[in-house]
Image (cartoon, rainbow, N blue to C red):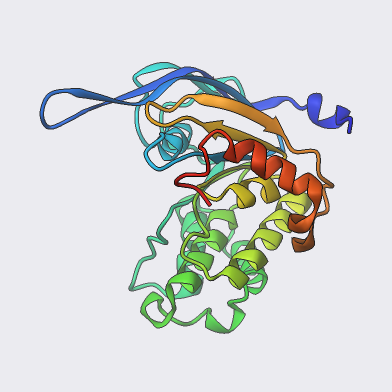
Length: 264
């Protein structure tokens, strides 16, 4: 299926021979990420899948500007990324909510830090809480929520300042299967409506295929890009698509890289 609009996208994020080496306690360096080059198009939904320890979360943190790279160039809109970016939202594996702030106040945190208009930000936060199914919990505190509910708060928080790029590091891993399916659909709807670029790390091959326009398949450590797969499925996807032959072809193509070990 031809995809001319996607081919013409201007890159918003560029990784050029990015490498990351950590210093270990025993003095021997650990190479988490081998030289990696990748371009992420403006408005693209890109998923990254690979075994545990392959460097996919490291790559996400490099793009976020949270850790320094060892070598290579990392660009956003052709400008060097040298630290956290105002125009990015981040969702980690765990929610990282402030226990003394209500759900609504946790969602509003990025807007407060960036000093965005309070009334508009509050309206946006309430809209996002409705989207993630937590409208009735705006005045609650994190300890009153389940782990899955807390993660939904974190997702709403990452979107409140309407960033151009959202980075997600296995954000649905703690959710039950039904909620995970719902959130996958909601993330795709938000992405289509907002035109946000999403970089989504997961260990689930079906989730990577369901969400991604392209899937980046990583090798075991040191992480390299084994393959980048164009997912030629309809832009409007529902859960039933996972039962189609075409979906299964993509899953098997990715799973073959890992001999079906260590990944869903």
